[in-house]
Image (cartoon, rainbow, N blue to C red):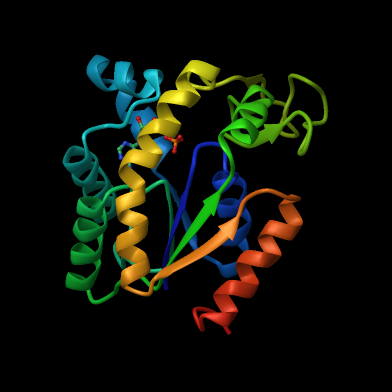
Length: 215
Ligand code: AMP
C-alpha cells in the first residue's frame, strides 16, 4: 500500500505522517528532508529551500524517483509526505510505481487556514539530532531547547512569516490543480487540519476505513 499526504504549510502533515506511518507500518518518506539533504551540497538548491520556494517540479521528481530506486527496492508500503505537489509529479510517481507493479492507493489532503499556519510556524522547533518536530504550545518538548533524545532544538530557516507567505501562495497556486485532479480520479480524502493531533489522526483513520483503503 502506498499513500500520499498533501497539506498546506504547517498543516501538521509531518506529525500526522509520523503517526500514520507507525500505525500502518509504512516507510515515512519526507520530501523536505531529501530536499534539505541535497541542498547541503548545492548552493542553488540551498537558496531555493531556505527561501521557502519549491525545487522545479520535474527536477524534484527525478530526485525522488532516484532516491526510491536506490533505497526502497520493493517500492511498496510508503507514506509520501510533501510529494507529489504537482500533477506532473503525481504522474511521474504513479507511472514509476505502476511500472514496478504497485501504485498509489490514496491521497490525503490536510488543510489549515493561513493565520493558523503562521501561529503554528512561530512555535515550531526541530531536533538537530533525530529530526523530531515539536510545537512549543500543542506538542511541547521536555525543555524549551532540548529534545527527548538530548539533541538541541532549532527553528527552521524557512519558518519565518515571510517564508510561510511564499509557501502558502505556492501551495494554493500549484497544489490546487493537483487536488482537483485527484478529486476527479476519486483518490482524494480531505481532512480538516485544525483540532488536536489525536482528533485529526482519528479522522484520517476513519476516512481511510470509509474509503476501504484500510480494514
Ligand atoms: P517541507 O519540509 O515539506 O516544507 O519542504 C521543504 C522544502 O523542500 C520546500 O520548501 C521545497 O524547497 C522542497 N520541497 C519539498 N517538497 C517538494 C516538492 N514536492 N517539489 C519541489 N520541492 C519540494
